[in-house]
Length: 361
Image (tube, rainbow, N blue to C red; front, side, top):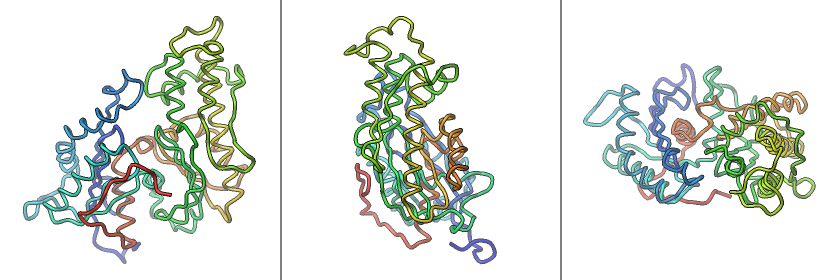
């Protein structure tokens, strides 16, 4: 990628994100300067169900996507030329996610690309989360020499995904670990439901844990076989249920006498963070020449995880990179940013771009 005086023209990119329950549209210049980043959350729509309902999510995207595009363009202050906005590229998350939701975003992106005669690039949503760490305001990491960041290990932790990568650049990632059952964010949601804390689970568990004792419950750290980089979080939610409500109890049962929600939340959070840190440690030791560890996704906003990462950085002598808080959750700025990088490497997608529910292997 050319920067500074070698590259005069600025590339203005529209990004669209609709992989799950956030509708996002953003405009980004040259892969890192965010001109607009509009996100509409569907939490009020899904919270009474305790999780995302795919059919409701896709319908909600259909209802708002057109005005979200209009709003992002207006916020970016783009001038019109020849009846279309001053855009150079359209990018869209086309994998992985809820297939109905993905199709809404992909269809919108292809329609705009056709109507405005603008090139199109499809973006892997999980890889875009990794790239969000390059969009921090100070300094703009995308402008640093790649040799100071890569090779890297990258951990993406969110409501729908838990994946560990060996990354050789912002656009090249090799999957080295994934969850065998629940994603970490899903485990947070289920633990919060058991404790009666609400939805989504990540923020409410974190707030409840502030006054709790993480040593109050001996919850399992499932690390699988020695050296494994895969994850499993199904066991810990069952352990939380039994500790808080009793052996073989239902989620609707009352808490046992003497059980403090803050203590259980703190113990759960500590156990989950222990697992994530250990998997990062294993990856750094296994992969050759690692310069940095990148942590991204909604759970990367967790305060306890960020605190532990500082100790991890000193212990492992690697840099730790993670996004600013607004870019941890699903957003379209990261889609536009990574789409720009893919375009610079020669990536081109036509109107035949498809959507894929499963993550790339």
